[in-house]
Amino acid sequence: MRSSHKLNGNDSSHGASMNTAVVAGGAGFLGSHLCEKLLEQGHAVICVDNFATSDRDNIGHLQHKAFQLLDQDIVNLTHEQVSEAGKIFNLACPASPVRYQISPLETLNTSVRGMDSLLSIARKIKARVFQASTSEVYGHPTVHPQTESYWGYVNPIGPRACYDEGKRCAETLCFIYREEFGVPVRVARIFNTYGPRMDPSDGRVVVNFIVQALRNEPITVYGDGTQTRSFCYVDDLIEGILLMMSDDNDCTGPINLGNPVEVTVCELAQHIVDLTSSRSRIVLRPLPTDDPPRRRPDISFAREALGWQPHTDLETGLTRTIAYFESKLRQGKSILGHERGKQRGSSHQPLAGADVA
Ligand code: NAD
Ligand code: UDP
Image 1 (cartoon, rainbow, N blue to C red):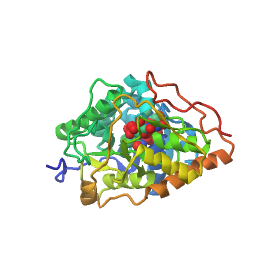
Image 2 (cartoon, rainbow, N blue to C red):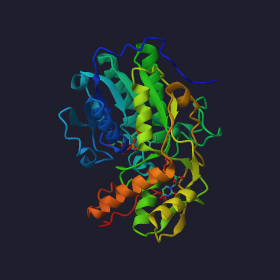
Image 3 (cartoon, rainbow, N blue to C red):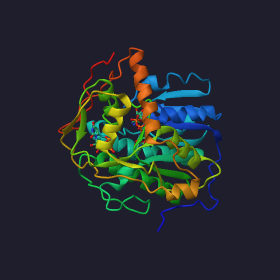
Image 4 (cartoon, rainbow, N blue to C red):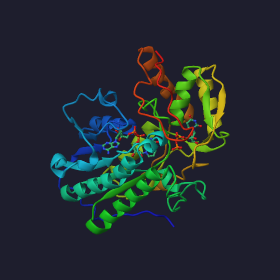
């Protein structure tokens, strides 16, 4: 059974200007790319971000009269502040396991109270809402590859629960607002996405490995490195998000968005060592608690409903991402400049905060 939800013609999100978009979490890695694309497409953009896991560098280039920044928590956003918006994209939430485990309550509140707040605003101003959900809703999957109809297998009290359960509850909220109040929602379950503008100290695997490789430092593989992930390049993902929110599609989802090519963490490490011609060696470190053993999206539904699939292969995407971090090095900038603390009680650490310059 496919868990798709069509709106049957009641997608009446048009009280406000469809041309103004709110991007919650717009200063983050994905959010900054989305803001950029929306501006290119002629939208006015209101970026709402409290800089919990990002800094202003990511949006520094968006000096545009159609770009507005609200430096605040989404939980406290009011409909008066965004009354002209026709679309609300919710990407606000720490996405790195290291980061979300530093502040579990904030993470949960951002997903649940923040989503409630955005949906309630959308109801008032008649806007369409996109929710950046996650493959984490599948937990330790017993179905492989993961299809949208699979309900997941999640530890509700483990260290990842603040994120996984927060995102699951946010999906529930979307469907309650849709059923009860007719708010048009779009829910994407995003699988591991990478690219330029990721925060190099946030602890996620692609940036950890690239920074370690560029510094000729040991590449820290957690566990035995046989766990798998499927990595999607940022441009492909943003294209999928925009398609979901376009007027041509009325598919509520949830829809998996990700690249179905699955690799082990060891293979990823070796790939990055090769592409950077690094002298780094691979070292094994303990596997963090509840680290999912495998992840691969079944994207048949995205292909069918949106005509979407990723085009960027891993080598091309990694090459572009490596070039981004290399250029930061060439500019003599710190690429480990804003470490935001350490995770409690696991090997899953952000990189030490030394400059590479
Ligand atoms: P990120 O940490 O770079 O961006 C998140 C942004 O949200 C940051 O700018 C942060 O400051 C902001 N934020 C956090 N809490 C906030 C709050 N309460 N109010 C206002 N702003 C807040 O992460 P990302 O990789 O860009 O992920 C963006 C979204 O996509 C997240 O919701 C994440 O769960 C989802 N997602 C990402 C991936 C991925 O691989 N990148 C995978 C699955 C889901
Ligand atoms: N990982 C690793 N070394 C690192 C960082 C992560 O081996 O320095 C592993 C991690 O244990 C997981 C995978 O890489 O199995 C992806 O981790 P990430 O934090 O990027 O995202 P996740 O998919 O776990 O949310």
